[in-house]
Length: 231
Image (cartoon, rainbow, N blue to C red):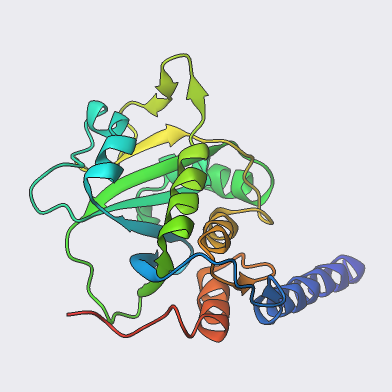
């Protein structure tokens, strides 16, 4: 029994060290100037204690690119909609845990081991800034386009396009789709967000499994892009 406890303690200590190093070690190691041009597009990272999403400002081109969402009942062109909010995560946990009060052992076990993945899409109006759960970043037009490519490529596709999951949304404005990639404790929702942000030309930590880790690394290495709130 004592041996098992010691191994658990060592494992937890190893994970803590890895998370700390993953936060403080930037990725990429050095800032690169890729000639992306002026930072004219502002995106947001929205966070809660365990999950992060990316909010993309709505314009005609974005609505056209993701028009399939409207066909599945997500009101992307609705009055007051200013952002599309994208997140990636484990299928069981995402679909079976709409609130913390509905937390069950099976989805947690799958999240810690291996699970299929899904994309979650929602809409948002005005996003408050500054706000402790909101971080805004300015990126260039080419990087913005690359970010949209990455998000679009995260949706799994069937013969008719992205595969919608009927009846899985939390409310009338959101929905779920089958996604590419496997979900586990090491490669989770926040590492997906971190990869998306790197594609957008930002620097993250080397490994960011939790929102606080990603948020801290973003604060450390993206001073130029993280500007004050706009009027």
